[in-house]
Length: 213
Image 1 (cartoon, rainbow, N blue to C red):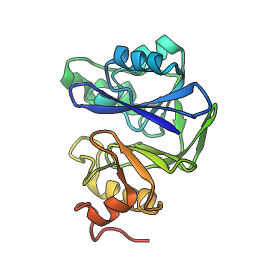
Image 2: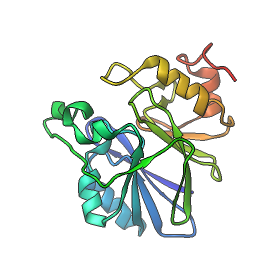
Image 3: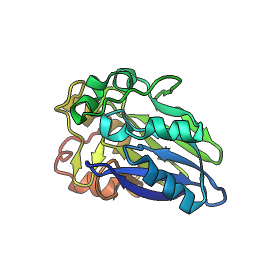
């Protein structure tokens, strides 16, 4: 899988454009803002987007969903449990950014362990609530890549001081869904540099002493 990172918005969200090397079909993961910047990158790469995937529905990750969905006429997929965040600007905290965001149906709600097939791309859905009620990660087992949103960062984990968050739930999600993956899985987070499962297992101060099999 090819991955292009487009950093968007004031909070420097990593929006990812992914495509199979043998195809021009692509998916957009977490288009948080700057829809024109994302569209320009798609054009530069000569890619056709086929879907928008959301790791979670906080405002900084969904700001460009509506204009991109309308522009390309593509579906939106998100974890089951994010319904309130996508429908309520107070819940997704976009009201605090003075730009209330509501993502209207239809939205395809994803279940844990579900396989999402979009043209030549296949992702396994890993339910990782904690940073948000219905947060998910997208695993490409063939390429050894996981898009982990704000669940896991280089040397850190997602915030749990927002409404609907839980530190205990987040740690359990990481233990059960991410730290059981092979060490060489490359993690593409919602902010900051990429990392690997092995590096975080050994070095992440939030996880030391928490991991169990």
